[in-house]
Length: 422
Image (cartoon, rainbow, N blue to C red):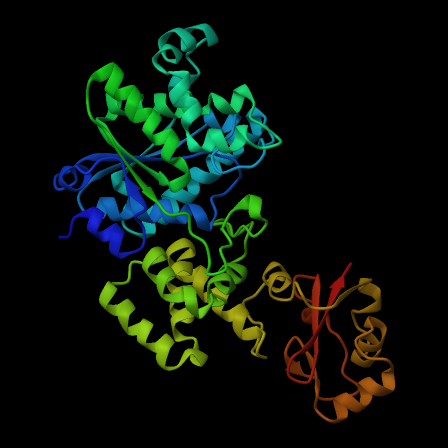
């Protein structure tokens, strides 16, 4: 089996290592950890990179610890941020923490890795400190010059917003996490995005100072598309790993819409497909990009990994609906995602149920008049929930109103109009 560092490099998942000894050290089994701060109820696609790297470590025979930062989440990591995060209250952090733990167990379980992962919460040790104790026992081991020299700190100090003492102290907390996991789990490596370099090296310095032992860090590149747009909550384009926040359809569509320039790289980063199989899809992008076979395979693989076969089936069925196929098996929530960009109108139930279709169409504003609706039906061009309306006498039955909430009208092939029944 290849060394984990070689695997990360060929899959575009390696940014840097803290020591040239990392490659040799990973030739035998070690314990590695990654941290996830509960800043939202769910991880998002950017975090999936770290989850995938954990799975690759496990596949190579290493032990893995996933740290959910119940304590650090109360502060928020300033790394890569241009302004201070909004502080979350304890109840919100606890809810977010449970959501992220669910994400980790579900996704690592689907990659066959959940039994090899230990999940810990840094509140277990950080809550035991008083402020004075932390300054005495931990803070005294850090030097201001080194802390101020971190790139993430310098960038903020030079900005108009500056940096609060709370944010400045974050690197101490993450460094102590590394020390505790070294002591408790014999963890000798931390992984994280490239913006975590300063926090990771702070932990390495702390372990070296207090334990006279060498530990290591590996960073992954922050994933951006070909235009340089980063996946992340603060960038306003978050794609969450929880279907309650990003539907199966929207998740699938996100990857299906991947640009040709990004498709092959994303196959390497987000899937477990072999490099040899990916090379075949690279050829397809070059030879026949119009068929978008690479994007379809990417969307299938990642949706199956995150949401399972059931989630993938729903996503594909919802996608087919946009091309006129039946809506069987989809609920109102699914359809709201599918038709989120479609013109819609609210209508009272009494104005829809048991009414002539031509009356509902005219009242919804989809067509200008009942006469226009009548002519469209006569010409075979009006559809109700993607089923052709056969007669001008056809009525909207209660069974046509999906979950008692949604009615989908269509004229022609792609002119959709959604009625929200209230």
